[in-house]
Figure 1 (spheres, rainbow, N blue to C red):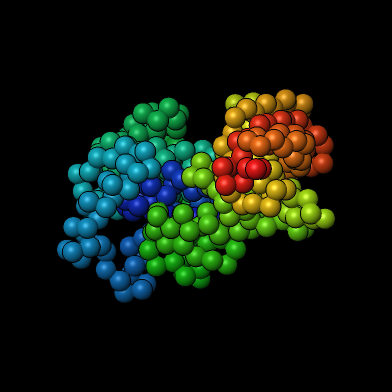
Figure 2: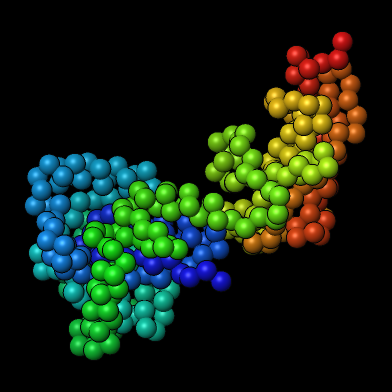
Length: 339
């Protein structure tokens, strides 16, 4: 099993707010887990003798426009807080680390609640009572006593120092900062780069290569792969969290889109063309469920061809077990029609 993705953030970092709302979703699409590590960003900057963006007028002016734009792109509420806390965020960090010892998921929700309250709603989170209020607004039941206890939690203090040392060793110089399989990514927007690299690491059966001709829809739900063996082309994809319905199995809508591509391209391959064939009719019969992480492939065949239409049938399997059968009629492009 691959190592967890290390995610470094701080409560005084606006861009960490964006990243913490995306990082787990990105990782889950590729079967990865994320280890959240809070750090004291001012200490990281001090180690590198770097200045805060707030002390760089041009950069700060840019961030004043860039940050809300990035929040909107990611569907996050944004409201400028009164100020970046002049009092720091020591209690926030220690409370997170205290919670992380007990329940990692709870600690993550605490961090999300605090940043939602501060950067999303623009409300103060200076005191333990205000942190408690942020949690309540996020439907998170963490007592004020639990938050206050973090101030004197020796293990939480040690963890914060340990996170600093590990972050420096990992090359961190700003937040948010991500380490995955020896590669580093700085900034919330670099999660797109992380996803690009994770896509390239998807495990596929021998002989499969990424299929290059995709629409925006299939690109967002892919990648798709194809293999040519003995003049037979087969299409496949690795099922992940993006493809699942509320029952935690691959959504029929996505599977139908996949077989539409697979059968259309199979027909064109078998008549020696890489053109586009519009779909006239498509049927999919679902035989069994497909779960996340399974390898799904469609092997189809052009069973008949007329002057203007291609008739295709296919079978879908998940890890070798048939899960669907499909058939379709595609319009033959005018330049390929039989005379």
